Length: 424
Ligand SMILES: Cc1cc2nc3c(=O)[nH]c(=O)nc-3n(C[C@H](O)[C@H](O)[C@H](O)COP(=O)(O)OP(=O)(O)OC[C@H]3O[C@@H](n4cnc5c(N)ncnc54)[C@H](O)[C@@H]3O)c2cc1C
Image 1 (tube, rainbow, N blue to C red):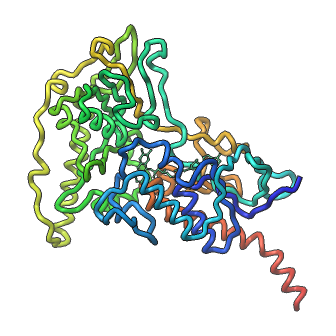
Image 2 (image 1 turned 45 degrees about the vertical axis):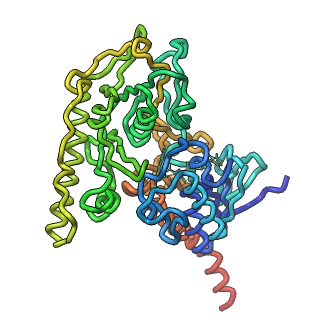
Image 3 (image 1 turned 90 degrees about the vertical axis):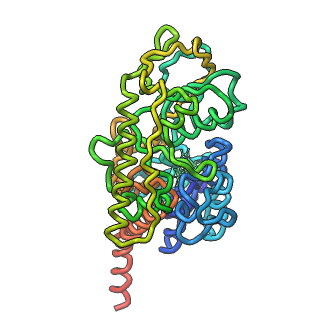
């Protein structure tokens, strides 16, 4: 069988695959992008209907193109993000082939490069860039058995309130997805229980500037690793309804029942950790620390940004916070659905190389695997905090394309030297 050959095979045509294609193209490195579904598939089919980007349009985009419909301070909807990425790919002429799944990649025997099996036949490539996403495999704890009869889904399968059976809803996890889904359900008239773990909740905006701007000028998007002890802290932000700060105490005043971290389930009852107040206080401390840093930045730089003392007002605590539940009988509470918003894992089982941590996470430095020729893109904290976001991945993509280019120089040295010797 004829084996197709390319220099660099990029797997996945989300924002990461498109960004690296742009940089490889600029560097003159021949490549092919294979996408098992459609361009930006996860934005199309793995996000809820009302999702809008977490960052404003001026920020959450590639440097070379603006969002055509949403103004700079607006929050584009998920379909607009997908359309943006597809038209960006068309604009740069990215060599993307959709509907082709990469099923296996292993080293070639006795020569450099990889043998790749795809749903449309074999390919050989010198390099692989795995751009298959930071959020690949929904994590679904098997805490509540199926026989308990609740409608249980992961947040990636949530679409809208009408999709759920009548009744109250338990949302487990209060990062950006859990917080937004819980609020959407509450506003749709559902009784909502939200299990809140450790989180950061930056102000949506402060003194007239979005938090994305503040994190940028304060150097926080560039942090190389999460602060010690904050590795498992999620971030709750929302661009929904024009963008507002995720304020769990306000949710509780509006009727949502907040719970501490979900610890277990037995005899029809959820077991809840005694950490709700600690988690809320920690979230508040993170919020207030950012306001302090922003104020200090304003005075240090003599900026004319309107003071906003009301941003420090605290909503009073509802009963669910002053008397937190440690156990909740789900049926008694009228709960019929459970939405697990507890994050995602990765799945690189198609890469048949010994270059992974025991839990399946790839070994790498800034996306460069210790296995020569293997690269990753779009990983959380790949080089810094911004790495898994649209604007951040573009810069990591440049680094990866540079690394591939550097290896080309070594690979081509012999050929060039031999040619020069022949010409002399
Ligand atoms: C709910 C949610 C909201 C988010 N909101 C924002 C936001 O507002 N702003 C922001 O900047 N970031 C946001 N992110 C983070 C990040 O931008 C997205 O997760 C984004 O989709 C990641 O892009 P990616 O290209 O790295 O991966 P993905 O979008 O996951 O793309 C990977 C692609 O690889 C394909 N693929 C996977 N395996 C194979 C295979 N074996 N063969 C071929 N193709 C394969 C998939 O079909 C997919 O299209 C959000 C994430 C989530 C989960």
